[in-house]
Image (tube, rainbow, N blue to C red; front, top):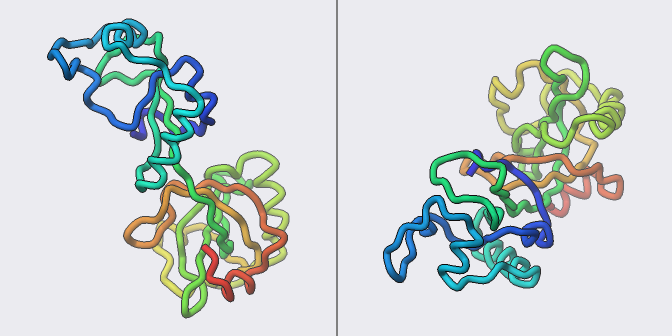
Length: 219
């Protein structure tokens, strides 16, 4: 899945000359007759299989159905591209389902070899305070990261604000801050250890305080 890229595209973009479906692995063979269709472009395969390209309504329904079933997302491919198994291709697009969650920032790390913001360490409400939920680096390039770092610098403190232990590889090089800044991140759920999966920074929640987050258990 990762080889296809984490491209976030809309339902309309998925239909723009793309052939898509909820499943995978069965496109090599015509299930009705057992004829291989490898190397045949999608448009010819559709004619052969009497298939039709997806409409916006179909893709929206597909996105809704896969999200409801807890699947990771939808993978699609250009309809005029040849089919070649086992080879990376820019003709593939992946539209993952990402839920937005509000988290508090408890520390930040600079870019490798630089001083600009490279990642933030975030936490979620827990019975004992803040539970460490991982590092967020995606989405912090450019002005977004610079603006967030301006908010974080005045909040520096001596030690970690998290009630749970922060792994050494995450804590290394971290500047700890008071847990006051709440941000929204998009993520592909959480790991068995409670870490956010592939999180991406979205925005600062100026309408939500850390106290609000603790009281509501939001996240």
